[in-house]
Length: 254
Ligand code: NAD
Image (cartoon, rainbow, N blue to C red):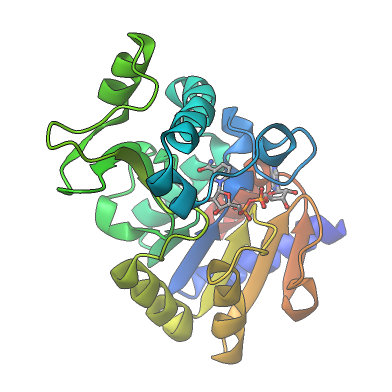
């Protein structure tokens, strides 16, 4: 048995105990759906300079740059479909073995795989939803992108407010209810399975440590090292789209 096969069996065995199983996902789970992550080579930060929240609110030039970046990413987003890793997590839900997914992702692919909204805690929002920064009205990214394609590079609301994808930008406050729920889930879970995250962005990156300090079994599936690897009970250096279906297969074998 290879190390990785052994790790898959260990994770499956812990999940099968039927306790509170949490899956915590980052951009790495969606690369196999064609959405680049941020920090890998060729990722988003190789191509774009992040626009900080205060700059977005303070200058039209920044809003135009922000929307230019979002528009480039939108082309990947509309084509993206859940991959084998998202489907494996959905399968855990169907088997009654998933307490919740805590995700840093903004792509909505967990919900598209069939997970009910209430099982997905979105720490950084959802880019398919647009919010007016003045009146709070919600609209769709498709509608905003139609306006951009028609020549409006930084669309505004009928109230005059700035429209922004409902995601957390650098310098913007984290959503309170979601963050509190994620901390509670991390404190009380039995298994905490990290998939596809560098575990560098806080406060999200603090959750595996919270889970571990409260006695959870901590497993990490990632293509590269993370600062939490030393804390993990099991670590798989490999693709999410291979490891997660492997865990489900091991569960099916009993
Ligand atoms: P990150 O880019 O910092 O890290 C991604 C990690 O996933 C890397 O360590 C990489 O080695 C690993 N990885 C890449 N492909 C993988 C695969 N197929 N299988 C397993 N691991 C793989 O992303 P992060 O830690 O999530 O943090 C960055 C921020 O990026 C988050 O706040 C998130 O909101 C945002 N983001 C989201 C999306 C998305 O919604 N799909 C895409 C890009 C960035």
